[in-house]
Image (cartoon, rainbow, N blue to C red; front, side, top):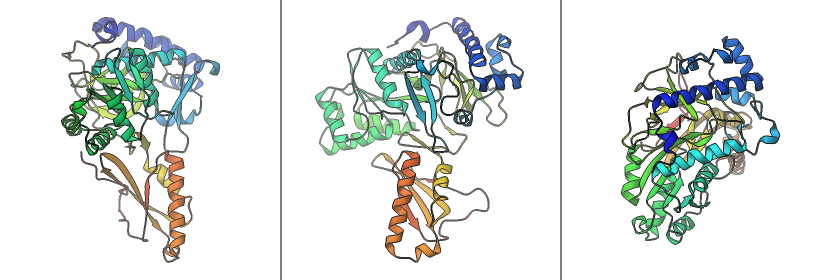
Length: 432
């Protein structure tokens, strides 16, 4: 099902004319309204009137996550704060999140692109959509919620957790589609199996999965276990949330909603713009975002794009599945985690040494993170109660900073392997 045929199937020349018009308006707006962008554009020697074609996009300066953090909380607003109806945030390398704002128009846009996502996955008006993404500052829950309402579906806002109740809802309310992380869907399938429930005997046919990396082998496992069609989606808070790109039923790349989000692939080392089929870092410029537009945001996600026609009939450019990242960010159960966040916690706790390792496993289809921390000689030889107190303190501090509960394991001094070069902080034991 194609939700918005006018824009999803637009002829390339017409689409590019629309993109240029919207890009020009966006550059003019941020130059006028946002001191950060005015300074950056002046430094680059680019005035709004210099944007004559889409090729001129490459003349604009990049925006990084650090730039967004430097303007915390609302330094990038282009509208009066009274017009902001909602904010969302994503974690960064410090305790403060990156905050992005949404006007009514932004929420309408978000609802629209998520309705496209749901429709592209095969959902229809009147369907029951079970939304097991987390609600809150994380964009997943409300993004899928708004899209379901725009589609005309009945949404069940279960959020994450309480898996037995999730399975019961799938059965009792005839959920046809579910939105969640791929690892959580596998966990639900296991809970259902333990309860003697075969998802094939229910009305569940579509799983719209995102917020964490997953492979085609995991897709095959999900579809084999449950009989659903597993659809990959992509989004990030800095742009709008989920709805930036999504697969159609062909499952052959993710269509980027490029009437709203202008994509480029660059060489992450040089910044050079690459061509179709070349793998590099995805860069996105918002061209309809009203409250907090961003120019050439470096996502750090590695992929490629193609303009080749898709069998579904959409003409929107497609991106490949994300193959990795250019930074050290981890995604654990939908939460962004940087090793530097963990380090900043440990250096502030007496008794903990600055030698640590992060071990990631997948247990019962869910990601599990353990932080192994060396303790000081004095504390290690002390009574067991002191070690238990330290472990609890580290665990609580990490939860406060990461927004994620992780395991903490205290280890003897000098037992974590030292490196002559860059320390190997992460051991990822998840199956690829």
